[in-house]
Image (cartoon, rainbow, N blue to C red; front, side, top):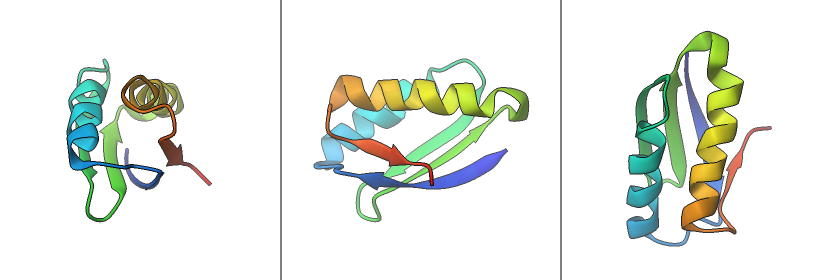
Amino acid sequence: MKKKFKMENLDCANCATKMEEQIRKIPGVLEANMNFMTQKLTLEAEDERFDEILAEAQKCCDRVDKGCRIVTN
């Protein structure tokens, strides 16, 4: 499954790169792209674990920048 998400409070391109690198390391992630300019995350991951992987991706973002959030609604 591949989905795009808006990022909230993504403050710098360097943070976006760090988040993307960490998200790509999550087991089950097929591809992850964080675009600082558009404030979007494109995540492709295993269908059956997508919600779990998305929650883990949010934890990756928290480790880099506590205020940054993946908007899921």
